[in-house]
Length: 117
Image (cartoon, rainbow, N blue to C red):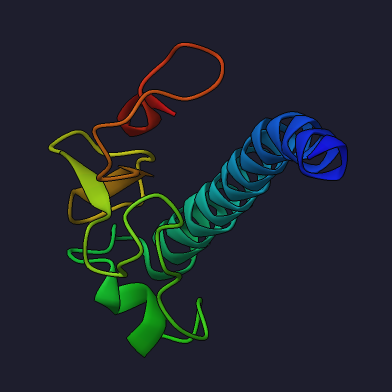
């Protein structure tokens, strides 16, 4: 009985730590994926003098090898691109995607929704 009590106490300590480390890892992956996709959007816009119209344009043009999976929704089709009608430079001919966010409605460890990162 004492052994089972000790195991239960250890499990009650380990499980929350495990869950928080998984959440921190997913948030780190989300930050990195957003950084990479935002760099790809900027590079595409500067190179082609027009913004991408869809996120798939980045993959087709070779700026991304494949569309990353959103670690919060576990899908590659839930990214929420921001479309903007303004031009980023005087050479740009077509407006399009200027930013991207997670499609998740969950709140991050910093208290802000993932969709606002």
